[in-house]
Image (cartoon, rainbow, N blue to C red; front, side):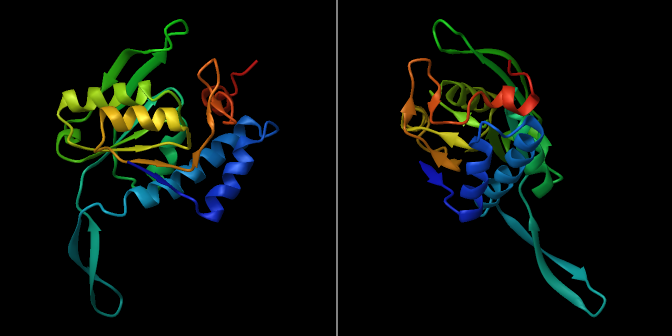
Length: 207
């Protein structure tokens, strides 16, 4: 199941982040801003509890988030989206999944994982700017489920039909929130038109 966030503000920022002329500083800022918009929509159904808040005039009945939120960036590019979610939910806990793509097999290889125990009972949000083949996302979901997580959401910036199809096949109950569904993958398994290598553009490591 996937949900496209087609808000004009998101699409405007998406146009800017795709641009080859956008430098790494601005790219990081846009990734943060887009993530905030997409996460805002993804968290609309989290549980809340009623609380009494004393205003300067009287007590107000308010609601506060009642779920443990665990954000799980897929290293390394997912780190570039982390600030956007933590600005919305500063109390969120953070776990990490380390995956890289084998250049010959194009399959994800796991090298690191670390999850807080709250991932078992709370809402876990996997973040990665690009959901391309879907292999890394499926691997990250697999690792979270093996840890005991039951409520999992995926947030990305750009994806494509091939990646969505694989995640839906392997984990049909996990919703994917994205700002764009691009045309396809090229022969090197990069999203087209995409936005290039998100990790390199986030951290200024492109050649």
